[in-house]
Length: 456
Image 1 (cartoon, one colour):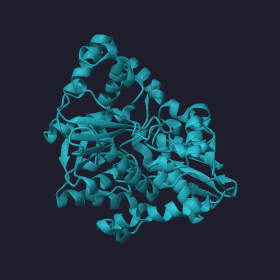
Image 2 (tube, rainbow, N blue to C red; image 1 turned 60 degrees about the vertical axis):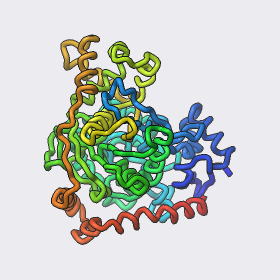
Image 3 (cartoon, helix red, strand yellow; image 1 turned 45 degrees about the vertical axis):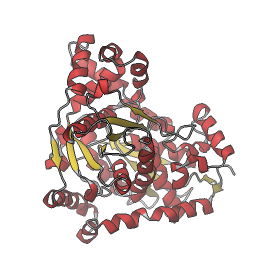
Image 4 (tube, helix red, strand yellow; image 1 turned 30 degrees about the vertical axis):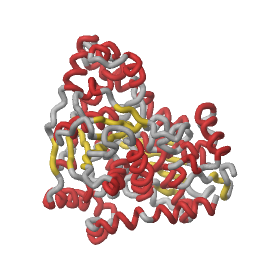
């Protein structure tokens, strides 16, 4: 077995193999690991779509408590080890492969559309390169230049819409217009359920594995900033294993759509899209937490350039150097949300909070350059102050409890407002208020596991 072919298009792993790569034939897995280091455009890299490293351990870091200032263990799963440098490649592949299985996407006939603010678009461009499809990524025109460069490097065309991170609704409108051409097929991350299935099964179960041997081995809280609201679906699976786990959705303070309908501009690339996405399971969201966008960029500066400041906090130099490349702004946002959640829930040293770093620093040099240009001073003493204020001084403010029925209804109303204009009926949206809807969507994983194996 290699990467087997259907109509000359490679078929990659099942959901089960993405969760448990040791179930891939050893010679295929070894070849894939070699290609990950030597040839990222070899289609065998499809078999590297997993949270696991070469030792089949979840890629993660337990943040130093000298940084977080809380007793709880904050465990960050690291997405930069995925092919293309972000875990968004997982839902991009899952959405494309399910379309292939269902016969909705045909090689040589269809062009793939990828509405995105960056990482999903990079994933779409990368996966389409490996699987032999033409791709067009639709995204706002005010994102980091590194994202555009990576997308074009992998071969996709760019179709830019006005605005920034908070204007992703315009990319959806543009995507719906392009879908009028029957040659185009959209990997619509905000509304297609392969995204939900990937993260609930692969990310959720990987998170459960990630806390083994840490604290009490359970997860007290899972924090994720919704962009598409795919990653936060991991919380559905975590809650099955640990019913006491609280799920927190993080938003920019400047674009607090879920919390209170706010729709301002912000700079946290990858999150906060002025909507409640279709695949967001509102039923399992317990809290909404607001994070200030400038703090995420300042926090990124601290971890990337502030080795001396981190050493003064008591963090070993080796650890400080290791953390330099692990995070982007959305990862810092998730860390700050995890600190807030640990403080709000008054968690202790046996408790674990899990969150995600979607990507690494490699696509954000321009963000730091912009930060440096906006401040008169970014010397060590400024970075030291930021380290204390942003991490150790993080408060449990702007934490909204959404466990009440009326709060849930607020989110359902937001979803209805956002999605009826794209042709979804109120009856369909109302069906999402029943847990059975989500279990039915999730149960399709077994079908796709079998069909992917059969067709490759």
